[in-house]
Each structure stands twice: as structure tokens, then as C-alpha cells.
Amino acid sequence: MVPRDANYAESTRELSELLRAESLELFGVAKAEQESARAETEYSRWITAGHNGSMEYLNRHAEMKYHPARVLPGCRSVVVVAMNYFQPAGSAASGVGAGSDSGRIARYAWGRDYHNALGKRLKRVVRELRLRHPGETFRSFVDSSPLSERFFAEQAGIGFTAKNTLTVSSTYGSWFFLGEILSTVEYPPTPAQEGRHDECPRDCFRCGGACPTGALFAPHRIDATRCISYLTIEHRGSIPEELRPLMGNWIFGCDLCQEVCPLNARARITETSDFSGHRAGERIKLGEILSMEDEEGYRARFAGTPLLRPGRAAMIRNAAIAAANTGSIELLPKLRELTRDDNMVIREHARWAVDQLIR
Image (cartoon, rainbow, N blue to C red; front, side, top):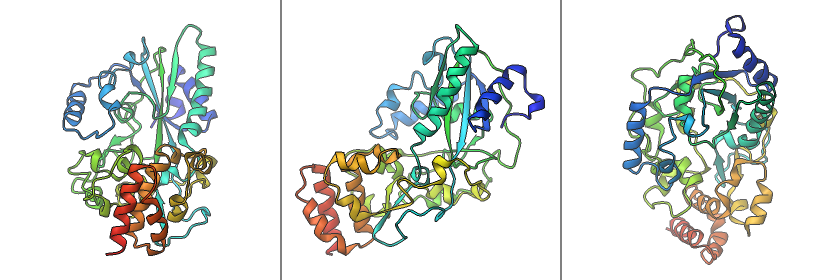
């Protein structure tokens, strides 16, 4: 976390003023050029092992991952910003109870799409920086740059990379979004945070034990191809049959490794209205997802939420798996109807769900 106001260098005061005006209280600055040989080697091994799955863009980004100047020529500083999104379960009415006929949504997607909520704030900061520094260049990103956000978050003192591969902050635990501003202006780097979180407890690997698919196969090691978040959001094709029964009723993302993390025990509830209310909500009736007839209707239902990313076909696929895993017999008629859908992925997963439910 950044030092107290009294210790800010004058140029860092500028960032503090602009970011806090946007209710962005936690930020840090990293030098653009960092010693990254070890991180690059590990990343290369991860890609070579195929742990990125169908996310081919991660392979294409390899040359830029740890080199901001390859993204923004002349970049000298990376300003990393964190934005808390945590809200407890049941904190807002979603219209859906915890019944067996509903699918779970990862906490970060309950409210407004973070790309917009955080992105608009960073864009306003960038506009002001450009006015103050004519001739200099600034670019902002929210989960859209080829850079390793977690690497630079650690370098900027935001937090550390935990055994579940997420960044943990002493302020927000792991319940926060990251964004960054690349700058050709050089700002003084901020020191590592001082607080109760600077590493995972030595003997703790609760996250690995809670991961039902074995995606967290060792501390700091994740196989995305087995991760429920990857399978339900990023992956567009067929989900391996052996993994389907392990996915429970998650239909968009997964929070299990965060929910069991002792470093999240004192998480702060967000004060950001974009995340304190529900748009998609904690849970969605599986029948609602299975009944969506076209992409247009799907997009209208989930406009302004992260649930737009997978699209109708992938979400119906996810809901079919959840229906089978929750024993939702009442959904059999709809699932049988979907076995004749035009989409091959929907047909396959609907047939599988029907087979599971009639056994």
C-alpha cells in the first residue's frame, strides 16, 4: 500500500490526488523495467505445459508480459490500482434463493461490469494527466493489457501472490480488481506494503484442498484447463466429461479458493455502489438460463455485467451441467428440448445432463 500522505514525493502526491478523487484509495507504482527473468521462465514453462488451455492470446502476449515499454514505447512507470468488490452473501436481493435449481455466480460478477466501473475512473485520471503533462503519454487498462498484472501489483507494493495464484492485499484480501496506468512520466516506486499479509501461512494450502477439480495442483501452480472459472467463462467448447460432475452448480466463475483463504477473514465490504448492488446477482435460476432462445435476448438480460463474456451457448452449457449436478429433475423437459438445439455444444451437454438425471 502507498505510504502515508506525509511521505509522498511531490509527483506521487499528484497521483494520490487524482486517484482518490475517483475513490481509488489503494495504488502503487512500479518501475517499468524490472528483473523478470525468473517470472518469464516460469510463464514460458506454464504455456509449454498447456496450462493456458484455449487462451491462445496468453501465448501471443509472452513477449510483452513483463515489458511495459513494448506496450507503451517509452514507458517508465506502471501505476497499479486496486478496487475492492467484496460483499457478503445475501447482502442484496437477487430474487433467487439458495435452492437446488439455481446456479452460482462468482462474487466479482454480482454487480456492474468491472471493466466499465474501474475503466471509466482510470480514463478520467489519464485525461487529467495528459493535460498536466503535455508531450507525455499515458494509457490505462483494466484486465485488457498483455502485461502480468499480478507481477506488477507485487512490484508496486499492492500485495503478494498467494498460493492460489491471486494477489492478496492487507487491505482487501484477494477481493479486488486490478487496473493500471502506463506512463512515460517516471514516478517514484512505492515500497512493499506493511501489514498483516505479506505471505501465506507456511503450512496452509486450504485453497488447494477446496479446489474440486484439482486445478490448484501445488502451491502457486494452477492448471487453467481444470479451473472452474476458466471452464465456465473462457472456454467455449465441450467441457471434459470427467470434470463436469466436479463443477457443482457454478455457472459463472468460482470463489472456492478465496472463500476458504484465512487471509480473507477480515475482508472489507465495498463502498462502491457499482459493486454493492446486484445486477446478475449471487444465483440465477437454471431454468431461466436454459430458456434463453437467442443471443440478443441473452445480451439484453445481462447487459452491463461480466456475464456477457461467455455468451448464450456457453452459459446454457454451464447451466445444463449444474442442472445435472443438482439433480434438477424438473428441468428435464427443457433439457430434452435443448438436445435438438442448433448449437452442437448445447446439444452435447443437454444430452449428458439428461442421461445423468434419468439414471
